[in-house]
Length: 113
Length: 117
Image 1: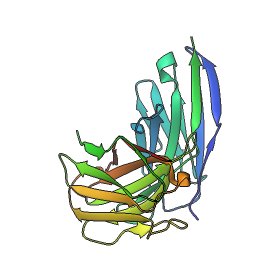
Image 2 (image 1 turned 45 degrees about the horizontal axis):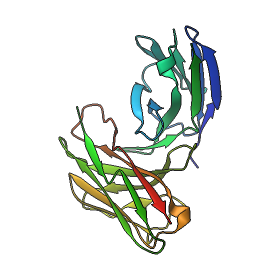
Image 3 (image 1 turned 90 degrees about the vertical axis):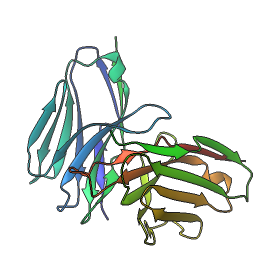
Image 4 (image 1 turned 135 degrees about the vertical axis):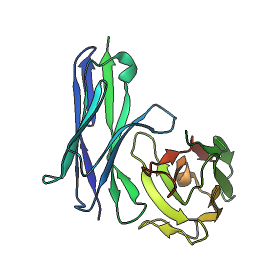
């Protein structure tokens, strides 16, 4: 079935460093790839997304890259801050029409001051 | 922006009873509603997809008779956990999508923490 793998499961960085989280997906028809930040007990918050017709997208300190041939996409956070600490999930759309999202397993990011 | 209101935010129920969770889209028409379950320190697992006026489509392994989904209007979808057991304790969260939105985003509700005792 559809599958989204995410690595690493935990990531510890020092404030100011960059953080990179990688995901791979299995469905070649996937065309929408959002990234979410989730704090404990809260709803996932969309932080950036990318569609299959674009290879890279940037929003201030956050960027996402997509390689459709290899079926992988990555989240890049630069100049990390302690408030970036949270669990990050990637997702990929599956199916036709208003597609369902399949989520990756999550990455717990800890940014130390 | 788009808002989905989910209630209750938390509920404790006795084993064997049923619990209803509501998700309302406040400022847009939710053509499609997705229901997820999230166990502690795990990812969001899709349970079912419902389109307004149609029967829900359940993911493999999700019991449709246990998790009843109703999407009778474009602004309201409900999930009823029937005959709840302790193993049903989890964080349930809905996500709404609309065909009216130019870039079909997914708007999440705030989640419901269900504890079955």
